[in-house]
Image 1 (cartoon, rainbow, N blue to C red):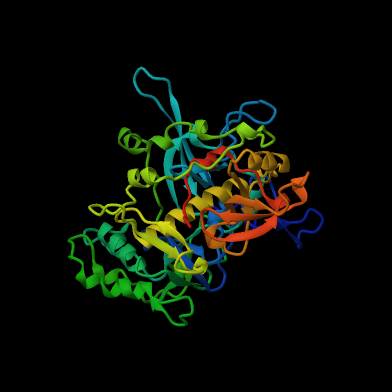
Image 2 (image 1 turned 135 degrees about the vertical axis):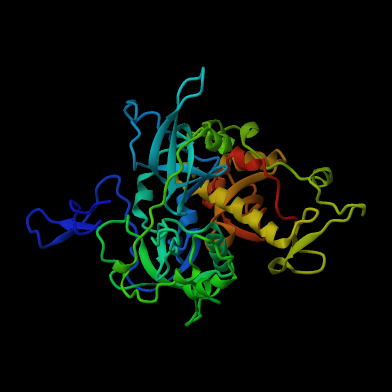
Length: 473
């Protein structure tokens, strides 16, 4: 794309009164990107080819910029004034990254698709700015991005491995315009063996005035985050070139251009976007072809309810555990558990997580992280945090019912900030006003007991009562 009419920077612009003074661009619809101008420790996000490898900074906050359904998603159907919203190319939206997970995205293409005898449907190709890849989907799946999400520049960024080019065509001795598929697959295999990478921009790589220019960089794979040396990805790929089957149109010896020392010497290869066809449309998953707003809840849910309407977490019985394949096959009444060692007080008193048949501990912890992200996505929004009512707690205690709520706990980020709890007891059960009392709570998802002010508890939504307890005492 031509940069003749662009400003000198996509981040700053001259002030109206003094052209020599630059100001930060803060226009509506502008999301800045952290530009790599010095070596940085990064994580791999997505691999396209040696010309386009997407990385994230190691301290990225991608998970905090996602919504997990059920959550509040404001559709694109109309504005706050009721006027219809016209979708435009390059608009920022929230789009389904996975089923029930929405992430920040940008509309790259809009296309109407009509089948015989059906009304035209509008589809959008969106690029997930925190992941580095895109997908086609129905525009009804898109949602409005909150204004606060525009303030986070931790986007994934593309890198072209320096000194690598896709070889020479032996028919016309001209450079290829794409990389062979087997080279791309082998590069992905090499990168998948490492977690951390040091990305070092080469000279003149960052001196561009458009985000369309990829960074040319030397990428080094690190054995761990403290590795000072690392291994060059480009050299590892070049050394593996002889193992590839020689083609009649590729010249493997020309993949590595050792005479390049400046970013301007390495030209980028355009990445084509797939045009929407019947074949691509057939592969779009159902959750990207229809509006799933039916999974949403009433944003004005009211915890100030009567005794019989306040939700309770579904109890987990022996029959429930048996139906969900927690018991070991062929061994009657035998259950595998993962013991929470921090809660071990005696051989007769500890918290344990039940394991499904064939489930590993890594899979168990992954399920816990997903559930923690669901709770944080919901209760992390101020409009969803409703204080629990002391009168309801008192009435439920005297009625012999269990009381559940939410408690914010920030010590361990891995298990989530907002946790489901059960109120076990109140300091003064006969008090007239429970709002000023302390209570003993049990964390029903992570284990453990604590004493906290009752006024610090939040009301639990009925949607989060359908999942039974994760941990048992």
